[in-house]
Image (cartoon, rainbow, N blue to C red; front, side, top):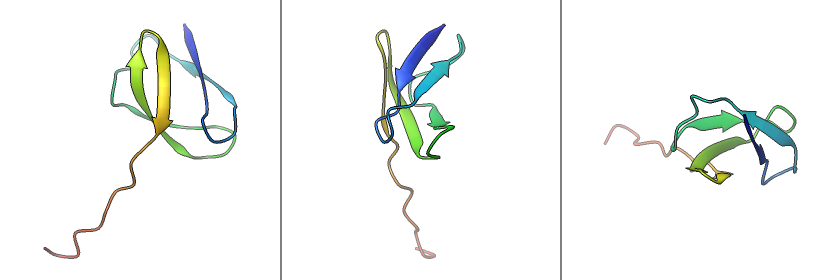
Length: 56
């Protein structure tokens, strides 16, 4: 089992064995969306914000 640290609040988050690169996690402490950018070593970054297309 692997652990990562939230880049927003420094909370420790557990990654399960099925976690994949690109997966979005929600920090249980601060609620920020995090994107898994590496499995070995485990690493996350702030998830990109989804942009509205406003019907385009």
